[in-house]
Length: 308
Image 1: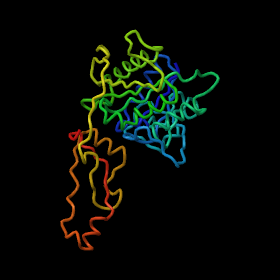
Image 2: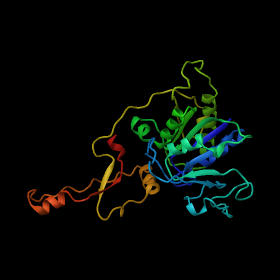
Image 3: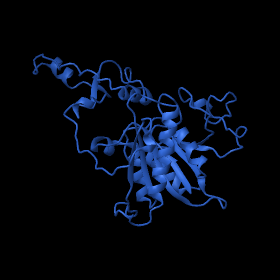
């Protein structure tokens, strides 16, 4: 089967996107034709957005043999030479099919992958399935699912008429490699194959494709997961409490915002950041108080999961 893979965590790296590389390798080992188109940077929490008015650039990227600690944009179109990034395992730049990096959103990656010439050739079968992920973290609740770039890319593929699966890895101790991840990848391949190969309704009446339908698969990173039963379940319905997503910061714009990769790592570690400072207690009628009240204020994304 020709499978299009995208994600919202961006290019392979231990810090931000540790699962896409072993998952693609697992798909290839069982004989699938795999095409990969992903954002060129961390794009979590962006849902099914497209960046209107932006010059969207698609860049070839030869994936490394192993995950680098962090992704380096300077390596993404070179042959690397030391296996640190941008290498092609079959012998260097241009001698294997590259992945495509896009300076846009997961949904845009799905749209471009399905509608452009990147992965179309006389010798390549049509794309039969789109898999978005594996996401670094579960998507089992309404708050996460409605914000997830992983689900957003799968939804974009579904409304384009493709079979689409959003795949997420639920971690408990921040495992990013080794046998547990390999087992989760191989198990995920089997689950996705099982869903994709069902035409119409399955024997249990639960699997059905068409009409913009997609499936969200969550795989726990636990040893022995491949021997456990696969269960149907429902999305947990939850919501944010007031003020749970942003923290006010002092100083110039962006001075305390570390970028999407660093912020995402911080969030994954479950660090609960403090609240912004209380407002001014000056007389609201004075000019200085009014200026203080209506000055530009800076915030950064700092979700507190205890407020779900």
